[in-house]
Amino acid sequence: MSENKRARVRGIIINNNKLASMYRERDGEIYYTFPGGGLEGEETETQGVIREVYEEFGITVKPIKKVYTYENKINIESFYLCEWISGEFGTGNGEEFDKNNKNGLYKPTWINILDIPKLPLMPPEIASAFYEDYTRNGESVRDDIKSF
Image (tube, rainbow, N blue to C red; front, side):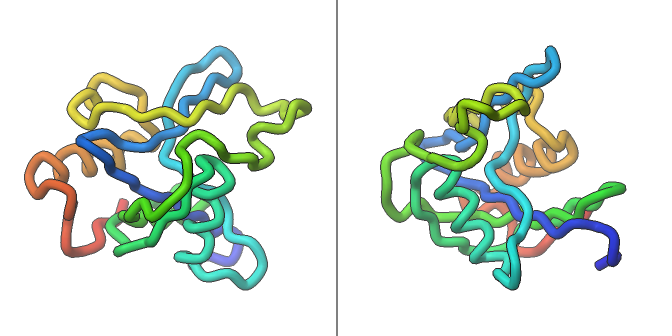
């Protein structure tokens, strides 16, 4: 990994043909993201996914397998297919929900997977690959790691 790029992790949580996502409104833009964020301290990628999903959605997940990596100018992100273990969706209490948050609106949302081609799910490369893999392979998504 490049020294100046931040390691980030994201969870892919599927339930009844729906995908857990974070609805965002920021600077006049509306879009959806996969839950996640930057690794903290010495935590592993799977520990980071568990922490981030809990902070954002209030649910405990078990990372099953890494299915995508995505690199841009500032980040290297790993996307993990996760199993929902427990908790009530939408009860997260991470920094996103702080009343003084200046980064716009965050709202935990389920989106119908079949609607993904019509939605601004970020990053679009991962959204397209996930949609294609899900429609081809179902909830197992894929057996290898696809990189972008």
